[in-house]
Image 1 (spheres, rainbow, N blue to C red):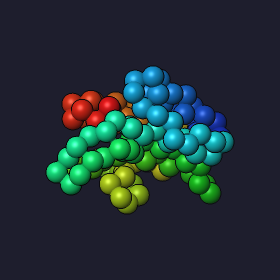
Image 2 (cartoon, rainbow, N blue to C red):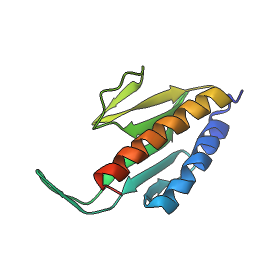
Image 3 (tube, rainbow, N blue to C red):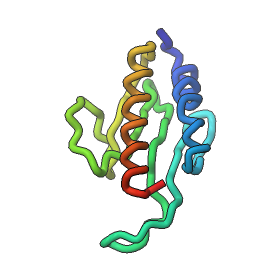
Image 4 (tube, one colour):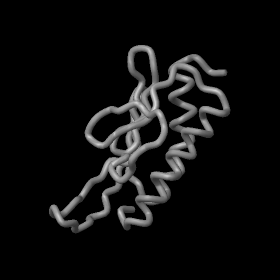
Length: 119
């Protein structure tokens, strides 16, 4: 069980890094923030989208926030709402089960982006 926020952040960031090779751009990468976005230009009903938030992890005061783009989902899970179509997790402890849950949610969002042609 990991309880050090930096260690939790680094573990989750490491699991996200392969997505940079799958068509996402790292828009922020520091010791406390890591954000992936899709820069694929997409024409939609409301105009042209040139950048779409995918996932971000942030060290906050006492937790690590994992924010996911949930704009196309009505979540059945107990996710934390971060506003602006972002939901996810606020965690202070990370074990293998929680890491797997986070990775599954990220893969679901990735699959949705791929199906919609956003990446």
